[in-house]
Image 1 (cartoon, rainbow, N blue to C red):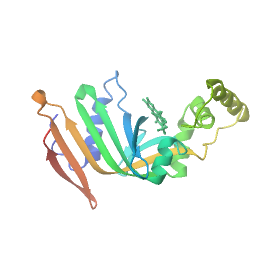
Image 2: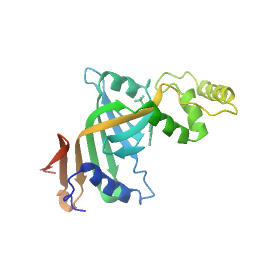
Image 3: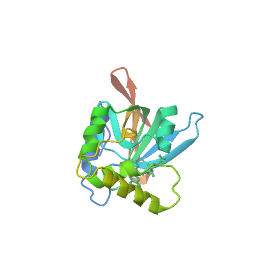
Length: 196
Ligand SMILES: Cc1cc2nc3c(=O)[nH]c(=O)nc-3n(C[C@H](O)[C@H](O)[C@H](O)COP(=O)(O)O)c2cc1C
């Protein structure tokens, strides 16, 4: 695919994303999420993209996790997607905002019950002395909410990355790859190309 003719990176993302979903051997929603401490020490881990629209890209996590703490003190973050079948990499850079309680509640309600239990049971990123302790917390959570709808824990919810910059990398033979960069300018976007 040739990277041209799209004024808006979110639209272009959608075109690639719908193609990437056709590859059943790979989860196209999986992305690397980079965060950094207030003094700039980086860390990276995988998360899943759960929504994307004109405002930005959304994932869900525990706000008290390592990434949650880093983002609370330094709102700059970056994402990287790789869709091997299409030889596409998408990089996103921007700042984060917490999703509204209503939107996080709506997504939490849509999750399988065991995942809802897990969100209560896991103190994500805190030291765990033995796996049995996690399973005990799962049983306790199941007992606590038996027969009732499980509410969203206050420390679990969505994070929106508002993109300032998005780069699409399309592989080409001979390493003559195509790189198209979108940068936010006011309400719109400017585009430029980079050498591969
Ligand atoms: C494919 C994949 C998808 C993942 N998706 C999420 C996710 O959507 N949210 C999340 O909090 N952790 C997710 N994880 C776990 C994270 O990679 C990470 O272990 C966890 O969030 C703790 O990271 P932290 O200690 O840096 O906060 C996923 C892991 C993998 C391998």
